[in-house]
Image 1: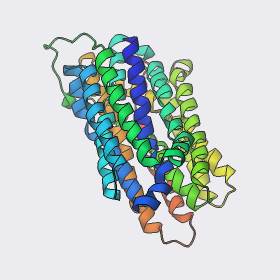
Image 2 (image 1 turned 90 degrees about the vertical axis):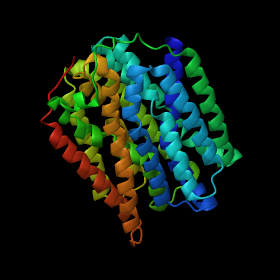
Image 3 (image 1 turned 180 degrees about the vertical axis):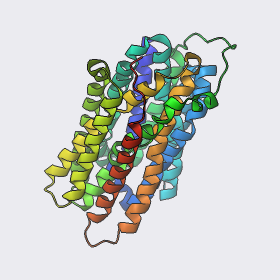
Image 4 (image 1 turned 60 degrees about the vertical axis):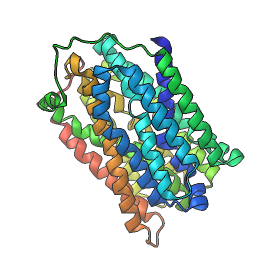
Length: 391
């Protein structure tokens, strides 16, 4: 099992990479195949849409056929195949297709490890283990920053994506050989996602799941690149360094959140407090659009750190899920989390397009930050009605 979890962690590194690397590639893709920020927002949204759409089928697969086959097959076909399509792209539409396929390939990876944690470890350790997997796997965020910018400058983006296709296929093969499925729970315990949707306690958690990860993922995954290029005039390598700062903050935040629910004796108020800090940082970006470049860099780092509550939100909802529906439970929560990012990326692309003609280059991004802040604030208000849990 240990070797399998290590490979799942490596697969999750790839997942984190693929959701974040477009920010670094934005300038070169615009130059080579005419892919603008709006095109890349759509492509990024397609990744999250495919990822979210697969969560419910993946939940069924985890409960019925286990994490080994679920993760290995989809990563091979979607991750490896999608990266190859990306390497061969000659138009913005090809990038969208490639990202859709890659989203399918990445969809089971994190939930496969969460399924194993939920089935094989005590419930009180779930948040810490989930955060550990997320934190280590988030190294993909770092690889998708300056190292990717350097690779693109040295060998080109096509060769870089071709190499990632080979790596994805190799990791998929390793998952098939090393991951061990937990013992199957008896067929007499039946249920479906509909049984989970009938639990009122989850309905106050779904909204914060929908909006808490979206600002972090959308900004780090795409908008941080065009923002610093157009508003502050940074180069590709400089943007790589900025994304490295935000990615590092996200990893540190994930590790910080992991044990804090047990330290503070609450999950609800830990999540709510961190989300409200993110709202405050977004507010600072809105109110001071012409700030010196170090200010938005610091704000992005703060958003990355305090917005890393994802595993604790999953743990909060997972505490109310019956054992025989764990696979469908964690994937349903992930459906809201990743689906929220996809929806917001589509919306953010439209917002940016409508504001692109503004005289002030910062205006489209002020509108984006306001959109993210407003949706997160609404989610926090609804989350006040949730029931706390540490089980």
